[in-house]
Figure 1 (cartoon, rainbow, N blue to C red):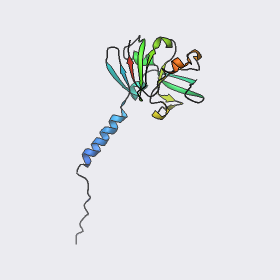
Figure 2: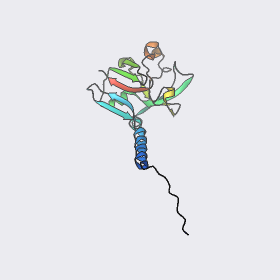
Figure 3: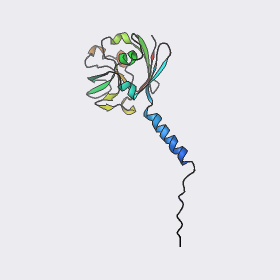
Figure 4: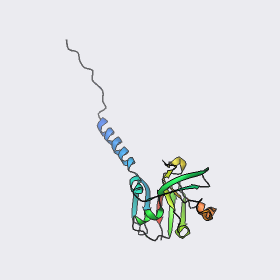
Length: 165
């Protein structure tokens, strides 16, 4: 007497579904964190690896939006722009995930490491804590810039920077 093996019911579209899931995951793993629009209207998308490959700055500071001092790390805006051949930008527009936009006169930040911070206290910033990128400077080292006019330019959840001139 032969026993019949039970047939396993597998949806006929399982392979395409699996492939779609893998492709989606792969696309998310290398999704751009920042869209950079240059003055010539060229668009550059920068992902985690591209930003991590740039020289990083690290500083500890207090901010009006956090409690106590924290350590922050990420590339300076100058390094991000220089990597795209932009040596002398004077005005940018930074846009956050929530639609907040701010024009920044970069002459205010001469000699100050204005950074696109990606890490706070060694941990990646998330949307819940102003990430994945936060345009920030070390206020504790530059108290003259710890004013509301500058605070408004410290855009969090930055997704786009456009070089105006």
